[in-house]
Structure formats: C-alpha cells, structure tokens
Amino acid sequence: MKQTDLKIAGLRVRIELHDEYEGLKMPESYMPFVTEPTNDAPDVTLTVKSGYERAAEGMNPVSSGMNDLGEARLYHNGGEYAVDLLPHPSSSFRTMHISEDFTTGRLQLPGDRYAAFTVDSMLRILYSQAVVLHHGFMLHSAAVVRDGKAVLFMGKSGTGKSTHAQLWLREFAGTSLLNDDNPVVRVSADGTVTVYGSPWSGKTPCYRNAEAPVEAMVRLEQAPVNRYTELSNIDAFVAVLPGVSVITHSRKLYGEACSSVVEALKCVKVGKLECTPEPSAAYECQKGISGEKR
Image 1: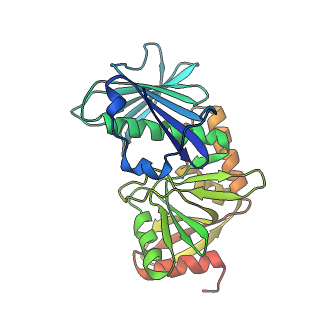
Image 2: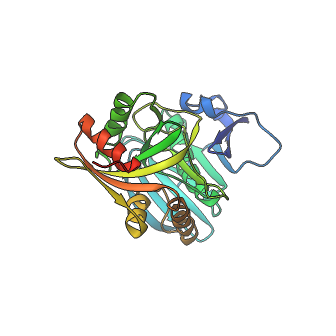
C-alpha cells in the first residue's frame, strides 16, 4: 500500500493506493500540498483498489448531470452515498462509495488510462463535501490577492471569471492569482474568513498552497456597460450560495453550508458586477469594493 498525505485548507487528506495502483503517479498539482504523515487520523481518506464496482442495487438515485469531470450520478441509501462517474464517453462508469460523514471514500478501478483522472476527480468530490463539515466550502470562483486581501469572482461557467481575474493581474500591480476555479473558503471561530488555494483550478494551472483573508466576493454578469452594485442580506446570500459545492440532498450538509455562508457574509463585502471584458471593468469593480465614488 502506498500512502500520500495532503493538507488542503487545513484539512489532512490521505490517499491510499493498493494493488496495481501503488505505482500510480499523483498529479503535479498535488505536490505543493503534500505533507509528512502523522499518527493523527486524517480528516478525509480515499482508498483506491483494483476491481470494478457500480452503485449497489437498492440505492436511491439523487441527482445526475454533466460537468467538467464528465457525467456524474449520485446515489444514497440512508447509510452511505455513491458517486458514479463516466470520465469519457468511451469508458465505463467508475463508482466511489462515501461514508455518511464524508470522512472516507472507497474507489475500485479497472486498469485503464483514466485511472489518474478518476482518482483526482473523486478526491475533489469527496473533499468538497467533507470541508463543509469543517466550517468551510469550495466556491466555484477565481480568487485574486491584492494588498494581502482576497477578492473572489463568481459566476456561471462562461461568464468571464478567469478573464476578469486576468484584468486585475494586468491592471493592479502586486496582484496575484490564488486559484482560478476551486478555492476553499473557511470561517474560523472568531469570525475570520480565509480563502485557500487547492489542487484543483480548472483550465488555468494555479495550484498554490497559500491563503489570504477575504475582502469581497463579487458575482459577475456580462453586460454592455460596467456597473457595480453592493449587495447585502438575502441578495448577498443568493449571490454566493449557487457557487458553493454541496450536496443539497443532505440536510446536514446543506444546512452547514448555508450557515457558513451566513457567517462569512457578516464580515465579507458582496457585490454584483455587470461588466464588459475591458480593463475598465476591473477599475469599476475595485472602486465598488473600496467604496470610492464613481
């Protein structure tokens, strides 16, 4: 058995590779997050073995859909969850069984060229739900850091999150990209809201094991002109929640995610930016966040 320990946004994650998968090479994106193993129990463990297993008969289908990971189906039977993932149309479904508390995942794989992709995808799914039970959430967004504070750009796929993040990098000296697609937000006991890099960053390779306090979260909408609107209360909540990776079928998970968002919004600015892909959009956003008169 080959074991790899990662530390992602403060959570210790363990990958256990058995059988023919002991030689499976971990993605380069994991390297900044690798940590020395300890005797302490990990927060999340993914076990990978040879074999072929589908969602058990009798499990209830919960949801299905297509995303950047492929075709995914979720099942539940009251004692555990199962995720079916089709990484490529020419492949067969791979299944991960997940404990009810999202601390462990069990994945059996046939030997094929999609093994590394499947392990990475399943770990992302498992981790994104586990962190919800640790006062956090993975947010579909691009995160930049300027003057030591982070701004997260949210929006539907294709809205221009990456484009807007790049505008900030070009227009504001000293700005850096923390993560381009899947940063992790956590709320501490004292109310501090921190965003962390993760091993998953969409099409832009940005795998930084770094963190920053969150100043603002901004939902982007394409428009012919640039206009920033400050949001509060329910409007702010509705702007942020759709970007949170959470299984809504689970009352516990969904409740924890909603609670963390509510806590985060107590000290984080939220806005909506109707914008063009031009540099002026970045300045409009920055002025809106800072409260400068426009």
